[in-house]
Length: 308
Image (cartoon, rainbow, N blue to C red; front, side, top):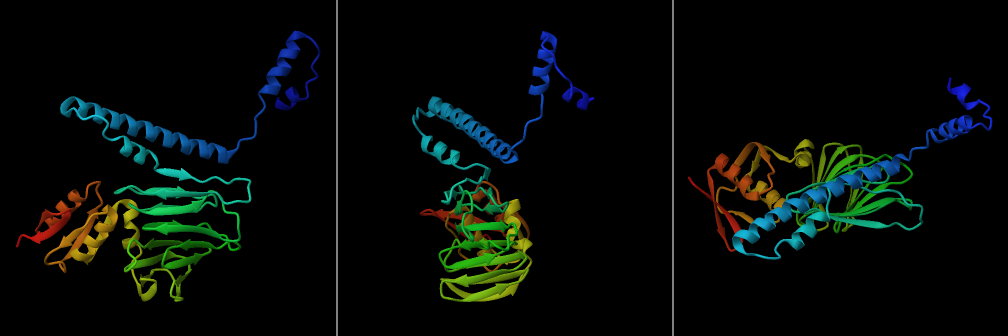
C-alpha cells in the first residue's frame, strides 16, 4: 500500500493537492542519535539544577524566617550547579581539542562519557581534565584524585592517563587510578593490559589484578589483589577484608577532605562493608560501633580514641 501511495499520480484538484502535501510531510526524517543523547543529558542536568535550586531556596527561606540570615548559600548553589551526575562530551568538527574540566564535590561521584565511547567514574574531590573530542594520535586525559576508567578499544589511538607523578598508557581496558597523595598513589588493573611509567623513568607492565604502588614519582611495589576491593567505591561502599583502621582512615581523609587521626589501636582489623554516606560522621559512627572507638574533635582534627 505504501508503494501505491508513493507512486500515485496527483492531479490539480484540491483533494489531491492536500493528499500530496500530507504524504510528503509525513516521510520519516533522519534521526541524529548523537544530538538526541546530548539533548537528553542536558535535560537531565537542567532538571537536577532546578531541583537543587528549589531545595536551596526552600532552606534559605526557612533560615531567613527563623534566624534572620540573609544572602547565605548563593556561592554554594553556584558550586553544586557546576556539576551534574552525568556529562556527555560530543565531537566537534574542528582541529583543535576543546578541553573540559571537572571538580567533583566532596562526598559525591561523577560519571563522564567521552566522545570515543570511553567511560570515567570520578571519585569525591577528584579533578579531571579531558577534551570534548580527541583530535590527535593519542587520547589523553589528566586526573588528580581517584577515577575508574573503562576505555573503548582503539589500537591506532592509545589512551593515556596523566598525573603529576606517573602516566598510564592503554589501548582499551578497565583500571583504577588513585593519586590523591604523592607519597601513596596506586594503579589497579581490572582487565586488559597497561604500561605505567613514572616521572623517575620507571616502566612497569601490568596484567589483570596487578596493583602497582608509586611514591613521590617512583615505583615501589607490585602485588596481586582483588580489583573489586579497589573499585567498590564506584558503588558507594568500601569492602573490608581485615584492613586496619589506620588504612581506612586514610581513605576517608581522601574521600571527604578531612583530617582524621587514629590515636591508638590503629592496627585493629575490620571486616564487612562500609557504606560511604554523605556525612563522614555517619561513617565514623559505623566504625565506632564496629571497633568501639569514640570521636573527639580538636582544632578541625577528628581524633579516634578507643573506648576500651
